[in-house]
Image (cartoon, rainbow, N blue to C red; front, top):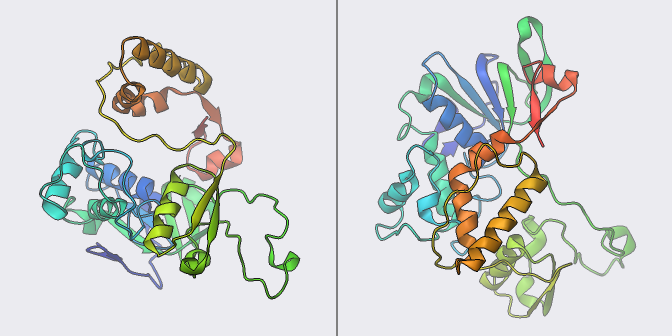
Length: 331
């Protein structure tokens, strides 16, 4: 397709000011899978442009890692990008990664990133050249123009027109704690930088093999990834975790299935859903069934749960820019 060859994305110096049915800003997991689904379920006149400033299609931060030690935390059988074809990823993994891949295998995230990249290639969708454009650039401004069209100004100076715009921006950086001495102005000039707000910044692992101690703020899955990466890069010292609750992620275990308990009559708020899940976990415990079965049963209805949640109307200016006076955001 234009701007994208195989698993590579090329920079467009002067992309044409063409109009598209939908413009997706962000080409990570959400942006790439949304584009693939739209293309699968629309006709030949429906066109999509994906605007992504860095990386390869579908990678994002989660699946852009190059380490085979960073694993998916969901089994291969549950990682298909297409709900109507639940074994799509499993078949792909057997053909393109390891023929011995099992439904319960936890594969490297980088392998899943490769899989996501194929979703927007001719191997999955045959009519891409006429319907999908991938632009490596950065969206800087969005405004409504005549005839209800939406104009996106790019860093390169080019512009894109669309009927609808989707923001698939991923997770924003975590907030920075107010710790004394973490900025360059408050530490001695001869003391190298010791605090990194992002564990995936280029200098954060530089020279770790020479250190004796590393402190990680938080003990969730990201910290587990950092700990694995520290060992991979030769760090042999002590890794400390600082956490408000002192909890580590639970490992996967074999468990009995639990029936789907969510229905259209279930609570329509996050708090109500939390209470419902906790009630089910307690009932499963009384029956000798692990809580993981309760959580896994929700995978089958996650889209329906999401769609059932109440909508909060956006301000009129935002709704107009995003293409519909009734646009809304999930709470």
